[in-house]
Image 1 (cartoon, rainbow, N blue to C red):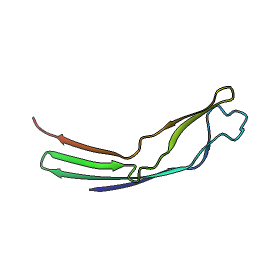
Image 2: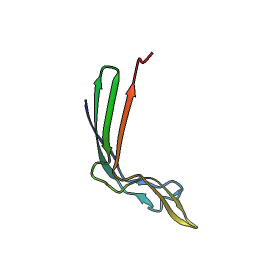
Image 3: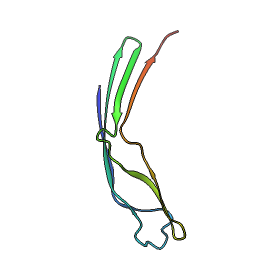
Length: 88
C-alpha cells in the first residue's frame, strides 16, 4: 500500500488572546508519504512525515505580560516498523 497524506490548517488566533489583538499562528501545510507491505504474518511499514521539512506551529499561546510562546512541530521524520501477527 502507498499512503499519501496532505495536512493543512489556516491562520488561527493564539490561545490566551482574549482581546483578539492580532496574535496569529500562520497557516501551514505538510505532506506525508508511507509504504506498507504484508507478507504472510509479517507487516513492514516505512514512511516520511513532513516530506518537504516545513517549519510550522500547531499550538501557540499569547500572554500580554510575557509575549508569545510557540510550540513547533518536528521537521522531516522517518519511521520504520515491523509487526508479526498470529504467532501462536
